Image (cartoon, rainbow, N blue to C red; front, side):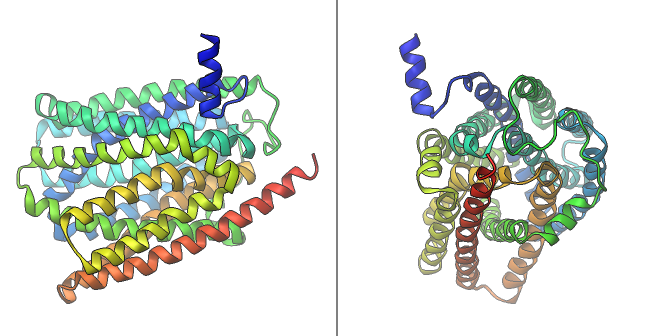
Length: 429
């Protein structure tokens, strides 16, 4: 047993004492992503129900809802001890899921509540995931993040793999309302894992990047995250990186919605198709996270994680402009999403480990929610305008290639800047 444990620690790049907190982090992400990805196909079905031509309105509604949530979350972060931010937020989200389950049970085919759920889940997924990563960036040092964030992200991919399978199998017997109740239970379980991580850190020496204990509220005002981004070139670079990421994702997302809606007309069948795509994405992502992400970050730096996928997407967009087939589109979509989960997302979260605690919660939340959804809304209208002006999918793909290239160059700069900030933190020690 000891030999197996040592080998497992070696494979996963763990140091003594890190096994239990890593397991807790895996459970946190597994339950969160299992619940979300079980509902993601439901969200896509709800989006199609409102009409593919109306998706840009849903993206705009999501952006407005995100703006409305920003001061509320900022107030919570300013007033509540850091250990309580995640439990309170996730508990509120779980109660929302139960309300939507009741509404869907009363009127399963209602377009209004379908649109409301689409917007709510689109706000929830960014805020909940961003908050989970904020907690981990707060609890682990920059050195630990390079070794462990890839492994922890594997918990997200495991959940992302299990969620679509559960959704595909259970949507027929339980219905959409039943899936929402199950997701609320999974989200509640992730709170327990987060509380364990907080207790673990309380018994450990503070990392070099922790300037104040989590038992103290951060203070400040609800808009501090936005003002911090505007003052910091590094945070502005992260915001630009996220904006370009969202734009590339939106261009591909609109094409996915159009193709699936034209090919499959039954709502249950659409949910199953979206679920199968998620399964393929998560399977590829988890293999990369477990065996490659941490080693790449440790040996080559964060910049490699942030550059590779954007450059691949630039090539993919050019290929789609020249050969716009459904098979090639699916390959590009799967590569983009798997690469984002396995490389881009862990690399992006590593950037925040060299920043103060307030930036890890407030500025990070502003970037992950408002900036991301703003990019969604803006690029959604651009894509819609291209569709209205004429049937020229090649033009949209070439614009996407340019955005992806800028995305990669921004990632390269961020990787270099992160390395400089990390070195500056190491000098006083």
